[in-house]
Length: 185
Image (cartoon, rainbow, N blue to C red; front, side):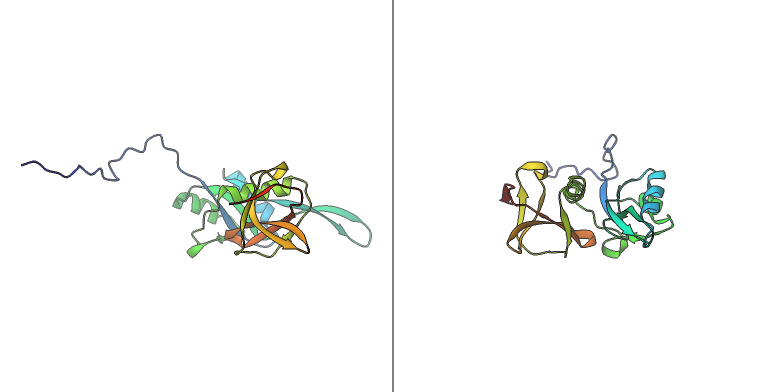
C-alpha cells in the first residue's frame, strides 16, 4: 500500500549551518543624559550602535560653547540578533533600562527608518522635530540628496513637509521638501 504523505523535516534536524543570524535595529531606553556612555559601552561589547547627535550652541554668562546632544533624548539604537544572549549583553549595561517595545522584548525597527534619520541628520538640510504622526499618506522622495527616503507628507503653513518617523520610540523629524520629486507609496 502506497503512502501519499511526504516526509516532514523537523526543525531540529534541519541544517542551518552557514546561515548568519539576522540582526535588527532596536531602540533602547536609557537613563537621561547617559546616551553617549551607553553607546560607548555597547560599542565596547561589540554591539553596533547608532546615536544621532545634533549640535547646539549653549550660552552661559561668560561664554558660548557648541555641544553635541542626542537627537532623541534617553534613546540609543542598537543592531543585534533577537537572542537571549544579545539581550542580556545589552540589558546588563548600567544606564540601559529596557528595550522599547512589547513586554520589554523590543520591537525591531525597519532599516529604512534608521537610514532615513541618518540621511536627514547627516544631510545638512534644515529640519525640525515634529510631533509623532501615525496617520497620513506615506510618500517617497525620488530626487536629490534624500532620494529613496520615505515618510508622511503633510502641509505645514503652506509648505510641503515630509515627516520621518521612528515608530518604536514615537519620535519624528520634519523636513521641507519643496523642489523634491515626491511619489506616493
